[in-house]
Amino acid sequence: MSVRFAIIGGGPAGNTAATVAASLGAEVTLVERDLVGGAAHLRDCIPSKAMIATGGELSELTRARSMGLHAEGRLDVAALRERVAGIEARLQRSVTELLESQGVRIIMGTGRLTGADRLVVETTDGTEELEADAILLATGSRPRIPDWATIDGERVLTTRQAYPPPEIPEHLVVIGSGVTGVEFTHMFSALGSSVSLVVSRQQVLPYKDAEVAAVLEAEFLSRDVRLLKGARAQSIVRDGDRISVSCDDGRVAAGSHALLCIGSVPNSEGLGLDAAGVQTDERGCVPGDRHCQTNVPGIYSAGDVSGRLPLSSVAAMQGRKIAEHVMGLTARSHRHLDYDKAASAIFTEPEIADVGLVEAEAFAVGRKLRVTKVPFSANPKSLINGDPRGFVKILSDPATGVVLGGSIVGQNAAELISVLAVAVTNGLKTVDIVDSLLVHPALAESLAEAAD
Image (cartoon, rainbow, N blue to C red; front, side):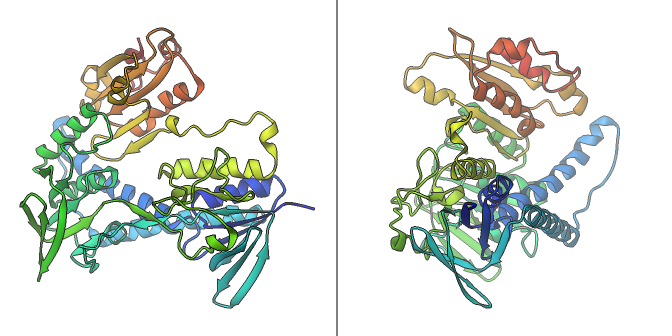
């Protein structure tokens, strides 16, 4: 008898777990209440990157003048909206077709646990009860809205109402300077908006390398972005077509629109967790062990609801590892997830990417490091591209040469970080990068130079 595997949530974690488990012989049922492919993925991640790409092309047109080209770019908001919707639809269709090709049964409805091995699904046609040998909770998250903010979807927006908004804001006040906040700041400044960014700490991206943050802040200032550092928003007032954001230090940021980018809330309510005895943490997340298994054997959690790194890549890998565990494949060569080695990227201009150790945190605990840094201004390809901003920084063990982490700021950083991610994950040494015969001219040459 095949393993019966039920999954609640069809985002990157859920659909990856479904396809892998099905390919291994499981009988898989996927329950999704909204969007196969995941609302956070298809209505947050992908649309924002599509809009950032449009803004990037506008910036490229400006840089093209230094290459002897003269072209004018004009933003067509309707065409942009159609493009974003088209990308979302195509990806959703691809995910659905892949699931169906693997024999995964998809039920559009709301799933709820009724026991450790049972769930009920409410659909438009009625209610269906399911029994399962293993259950995955992968219900994602939603934007966090504080008590002091009233969202109207017109002038005061959450991130999911901004892909794109009904109109490009004249002056956007972005609240929150984490990854999402700086991406939106970059995006809308590139698309022609004036932007004010409320920064609760003393630097944007407070948990990132200070040198990385400094490059981004300099770029924002060159775009006339107003940075309100050390200010925490505490109210938003709308007066007609204007808004004002008041901060705890008395400063006020006025504009035409306000955008909340202050984190997310796990979608763990209404899942029937109590009925199955599944525990949550103080944030409402559903934590799991190294197999992503909750306190109840046979029930797993993955993606944003698990409280781990809120990255689609991490969610998908969790889904893969869960499927392998459900199917009993951990006896073979099976590498557990090491969240400290996950690569991440921020799609600002210039791009930012990092992996592994953070320099400041390592030094704070007295860890010895070898830190090498090479600016892209010394790289021929960056000069050819007309964009010498940024650098490559590599952290390694001074005794062994093992690569422990790194940061990249510059063009294609999200692609280049993959080299360092492979090195960090597999314990490679700096000499392994130095001895690689890389393409010339290429931005990747700076990786070898930084490793030398």
